[in-house]
Amino acid sequence: MSEFWKDRRILVTGHTGFKGAWVSELLLGLGAEVTGYALEAPTDPSLFDILKLSGRMRSVEGDIRDLQHLSRVFRETEPELVLHMAAQPIVRTSYREPVLTYETNVMGTVNLLECVRNTPSVRSVLNVTTDKVYDNTELGSGFREDDRLDGYDPYSNSKSCSELVTHSYVRSFLKEQGVAVSTARAGNVIGGGDFAPDRIVPDCVRAAEKGAPMVLRNPRSVRPYQHVLEPLTVYLRILEAQLERPELAGSYNVGPEVTDCVTSETIAELFRKAWGPEFRYEIRPDGGPHEAGFLRLDCGKLKETFGWRPRWQIGDAVRKTAEWAKAWLAGEDMTEVTDRQIREFLSV
Image (cartoon, rainbow, N blue to C red; front, side, top):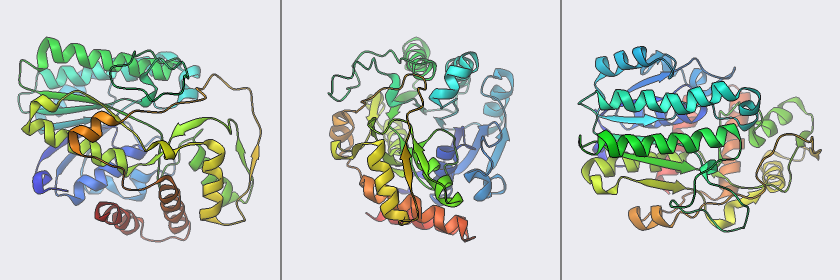
């Protein structure tokens, strides 16, 4: 990646989460001056703690719903770029706690953009939402950025609302102020250090660690899986490009090729191949809440605008995730393992 990031001041919300920890490590390697704003790490163990990031960047513990505290952090750090990833990200959790989900994902976005509006140093912003923002009628075609927004469940719908909030702030305030703002709609990501519940690859790792079979709830559900570094490097590319060329700001789908939109059972099979025959899984539907059976993104806009192509196919992504998990279980230096995977990814 370019020298652009050296000494750049960037504020990352949600930095203690899985994607947030990976992007913080990536930015530190690029020489950026990183401030993170988030609640404490959402899992134990967590990638944030494993990489010892609290001692290597400015890490502020705070709730994205707390406008007063967030505003103070903006004033103190005067970021030039903002990457917004703080969210309640689990579909099943959104059914149990819909109010928390809307407060975090909608009002959290309002608070973030209000801070941007009142911080003259900010010039480039990216709000990360989800591929689930679309009105999914499961017709089989890939969603485009101008398709109708209307997520089904509270998580997906709250992210649709976050998109609309962003559009309003851009039109009402931020475009006139010269702030370039985009949203990025990424698919399911996998990679080392994800310990979240109700996600297939972390479930695979936990089952392999225990020597127990992993339970597949929806084996035929098709999702656009990609390694976590795929969207993260795109996010940084968008932030950099729109700072220099504000006309590039907009909404972007970030997903894998069609061949990497695979079923949950395919993911389990790829993990078994990467881990070894001691990993097993069982298909056991549990009658849980609605989850879309088919979901795919059309990433033509991203490819045309930036000449972008995915670097790792789904088999590579699963293999790298298994390698990371085995290294962690073996007690290796995980900062070095993580940095090595970043170097390998960027060299492709």
